[in-house]
Amino acid sequence: MAPITVHTPPVLQLRDVHKHFGDVHVLKGINLEIFPSQVVCLIGPSGSGKSTLLRCINFLEEYDCGEVLIFGERIGYSTSYDGRRVPMPKEHIRVMRRDLGMVFQHFNLWPHMTAVENVSEAVRSVKKKNITEALRISRDMLAKVGLADMENRYPAQLSGGQQQRVAIARALAMEPRIMLFDEPTSSLDPELVGDVLDVMQSLAGEGMTMIVVTHEMGFAAGVADLIVFMEDGRILEQGTPDRIFHNAENRRVRAFLQSYGRREKNAGKAHTATNSHNKGVCNEPTDHHSGAAGSRGCPQKRTAHQNHQHARHAGRRYLGL
Amino acid sequence: MDMPADIVIHWADFFRQHGADLALGLWTTLHICAVAVSAGILLGFMVEILSRNHILRRRILRVYIEIFRGTPLLVQLYLLYFGGPAFGLSLEADTAGTVGLALYAGAYFAEIFRAGFLSIPAGHLEAAHSLGISPLRILWRIELPQMAGLIVPPSVNQIITLMKDSAVLSIITVTEMTKQSTRIMNESFIIVEPLCLLALSYWLLSSLAGWAGRCLEIRLTRHRSLKK
Image (cartoon, rainbow over all chains, first blue to last red; front, top):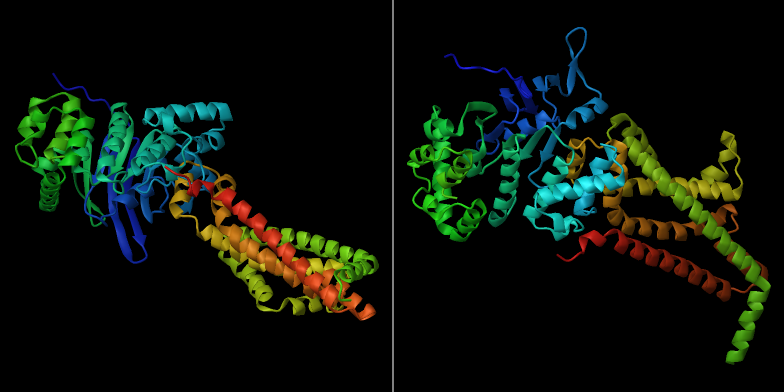
């Protein structure tokens, strides 16, 4: 019996995207297709162009050539009658951005507004909801990220992890169809990372299309449907977490992930407190945790747990988190 | 005039004779400063808004800032009031004084606003852009409130300087405080009393502005000093 194939159009397509910062060629021809409800993790060494790529997707960064298509529509530029690239009106870009929620490394909450004001601002001004409705939506979103009782706090009164969750709520309140995460946990204290990752994980579980630039290999291994490894402005390899983490074809990818595994393992030994916290968040039984840290024996363990939830935990276990 | 009672009588006498003139001078100073400062803030704001993200406009408006910041207020007032008619511009002394002071203030306030806009982290604006908020709304709801706390101290500084600089208007015959005082001195040969009163008035006005500024600053930066 032939397998049934369903052709779903990609929600996001990048075709031969190039980007220069002055003389530096940051993106050297990126091709990528992302499908609905996919969770894509962009990994790779610093300076490889991951964040730039993400910022090109919602046109916070202009790209020099190529195309970025969101739901089949090109963002940033249109083609004139003679084939030249003409910049799109800013107004049009603003409309297209409403489908894209973005979460930043440094949260970027507006410091003079309370949590609920941060979330409701765009709901009021962009979605044109009245204030009662906007506040209701915002409170729901804050509750969703576990901050129902923090709505009247200013960003300065919140921890990094709480701030980042407010930022996620702010993006979600706009009902985006794709969420972009730019190193959402990189500037958090280790013990606060878990809360943010949990929110992201539950979001992935709801079927949100997510593109995540991250150094959290445990999260990438556990939650992603597709891992994209970038280096020096190019995509070196992409594939399922299983393939990238255990059977990567590219030597460079293998070397990078190995060095990560070692570092995480060492860090794991040093910070047992962090580990126990993450375990608690995952509700992971301790027997899964022990012995699996950073070892190559992980694939067998993963096949033993077919269900999705366990596959996610396995990702963390793989790196001893 | 060595008994306390004599001093009281002396001052009462002085006020009876010149009080109305002094009050008129104080009123003129206040009202010229209020108009010139408001116009200057508005002008500075407009200059900075227009020159944002537009290189040509920035260059042109830069010339305005450099000229008005780089020449003495007195020279500007002379040009406007005495030189104006040569260019077909004859203004009343009060009008010329107010316009001159406002143009002078605008150049400084433009720089204060520029500093204010520069202080806003790019990420806060990116967050707003990524949510699709319109530029006008970003300006009104995110940029201005966020920089308000920062630009209040230099603005108050500038307002105090302008208030004291408004004494220069006396030279182009505007009947503000300084003009009234010097007129009393010339007419009655009483020197110390009007000058002391004049200094005291400027000091009181400056202190008032400073105090109001501090109150405003505390209110605008509340979110920064909150406890966890």
